[in-house]
Image (cartoon, rainbow over all chains, first blue to last red; front, side, top):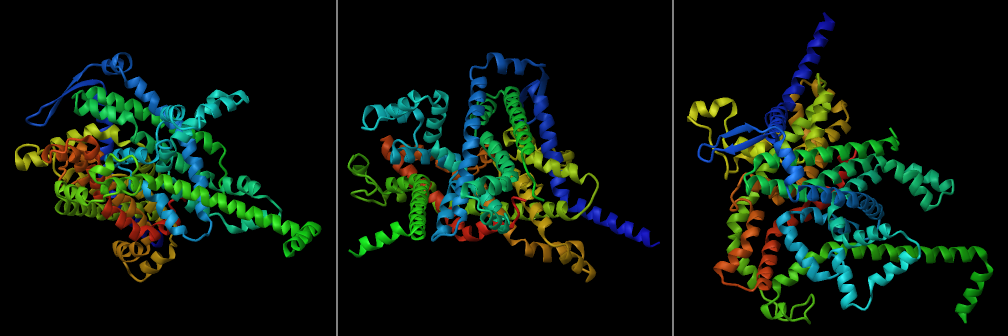
Length: 307
Length: 323
């Protein structure tokens, strides 16, 4: 008798659980699951929208859209690879920069809250319309630092007395690989993008640093560890799980703002080629998810979980 | 003389020497830290400063190569015209109402779903929560076409056709956004569900058990007790939601929501409007008006952020967003 009553209570709890998540569950099935199936379906079809009544007709064309996207379309492959390449350059830089900044902002100093407020500001200003105006004024303001790599070298060689090429040639003749130098130059010239993309990550890392027990640092200090050793033996392993969170966030974020999205939007709503647009969306999503899985698997293998 | 004497003690006493070296090292680290913070802060703020300078420059200043940061003949004219062309107060009012109501809806729905996942055991819970993560990861452009077509001829289960006779077209209205948000699929809802879930999982179970023993129902417990205790998570989600909703142009463009409601969309046509209606034909001068318009649009969101920012960072630290 007693056991039966307990069971009904548990059943009641689980029913309440379903009630709590019901709005999301309906939305997820009605919009996301259905939309994903529809996108898959569209990519194999030729879709025509009925402009007056609002319905649409599908005409099955097999793999024609995929073949078109990969073998005929002039810019899709290039845009996709550029987006992926940009991401590969940006993600490690954003992660290390935001971790570095978070460690700096985690210390106690005067005016810390103002500085933190400034560092989160890029998230607020991160809107495509506003961003365009911002980029322009940044270029006007700073000349070199916010403009692209090409412009840096261009201005350097023409007017400003200090020649970056000279410095680069010096490093290259010192035996530092050219590819590495290119990466550094790219990184420096993209510093504006990197800073403005790392607001959320800095906040997450600050929270992560706060959650490390201070006793660990005390032990490290007593054992005579230097700041460098403390970072690699205590701080870094402890924030490792949050590096995964941040990497996932950064990759998703950089893909939602990449040119592939613009291209898919343009093809769908300006050229009315819905099937092709679905192919673009689907292929780029699959690439994103594959990269995510690869990266998460790669980091997870090296992650140490404290709890 | 005194200095030399002190230097002598430093050189001869290794302990004093070490203290001195440490002090120099600390000073050095401090200077580097200040330099980095100021430098990065400048990179972040420089576009804003630049825009502010542009927005108060007169035509003469715009072409004067000697002017840097401080314009010679400052003017309010840019703001006045941008204000007029943006139809500022009514548009901003509508946008704030739209953003605010959607944020409230996000808070209600996402906290409910997050609580449901955090505190109740039910079959398929793990699979469903994995779906929340999938929702965060899937870029929104993957589902944009079906969203568009669904709301282009909106007809859930044929109910609309049964009453109205034909599916209704919800394009160019704000309804698609409200429907999506109410069903937990709004802008980054997955992330908010995740944040709330992490937060509620961190709260002690005893509170609810005490409430249950005292005869408080599940819904009453949630609204009267759990939500009241969730202020760090609520502040975090509020800031994120207001900022991303206000800045969103992707969904606004997709659903053709009127630029009289979404002011960020209006900025795109501001330059053309000023060029055509006010006959400002010089692109350099047009950009000055654009900068003034952007500043006007940013104003309320920056104010909201400045009010909430202290609570916000603490909120993120305490809301277990990282957990």
